[in-house]
Length: 189
Image 1 (cartoon, rainbow, N blue to C red):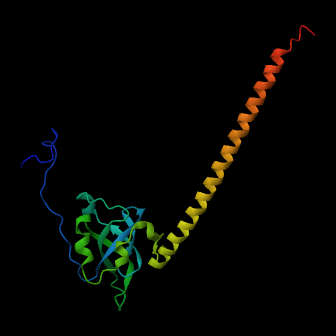
Image 2 (image 1 turned 30 degrees about the horizontal axis):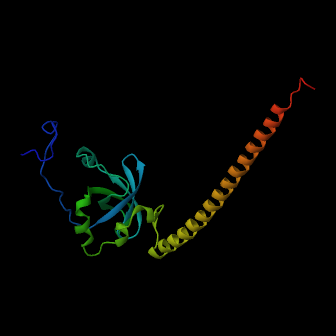
Image 3 (image 1 turned 60 degrees about the horizontal axis):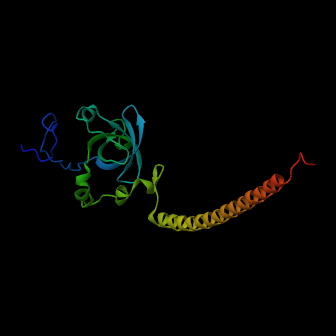
């Protein structure tokens, strides 16, 4: 394999030409976005159906060094209980795979995927996703607050210039009084 990256430590590193594989969504599986790490290989995720669930990262993923971080898109399988006759799904799941960032475009094209999964993390409020209209409203509020901050900055600059002007006049007055005292000879009196 040719050295296209360069650097003398290239030969010491591991090299692979494997591409990220796209994981198909099966029955009782769904795409989710990691919201928060809870500890003990558990994560809080926002699922494709709009619910929050707790998912457990299985040991095989940690051995493969697929680091799952906040904001990553993952494939989870929902846990079912054998005791219920309706076979209801609980609010728990298991992480099966992590989608690479290269595959997000391909994942967006899959039919039935919730578009809120692809929003930036800043638009997500704790564990619930904000409606896009609220996000636009917040940006309008931010613009108003930025304008008021600019006005406050201008007022602060004006006050700062006034204080500097007063300081200069005080220094000038002190110099004049010092000159008058130098002219007077106290011993001569």
